Image 1: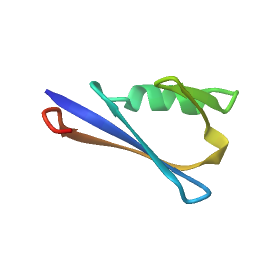
Image 2: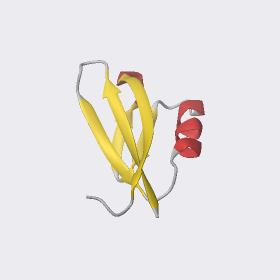
Image 3: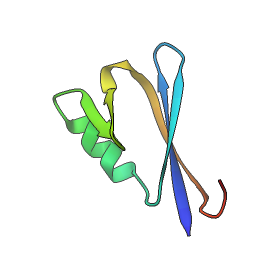
Image 4: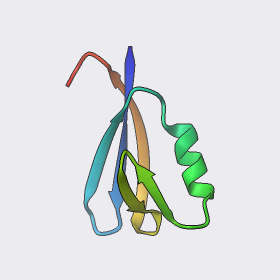
Amino acid sequence: MSAYNLIINYSDGTTEEWTFDHNPNTEVNEWIKQDTGWVNIQGILINLNNVKRMETKEIDGGTD
């Protein structure tokens, strides 16, 4: 079973990464449409105004 990493690069140069058991691209598209600028990613609030780049990568679900 495939898993996906969502990698977020911030304007200050830091990076965060989350793993999903589904492709998060639909969610990312919905986040970008929101007016608030804040999204909840697995319980953590992220300010999209500080995001420089988001990327999803398919990974092998059997790896850690």
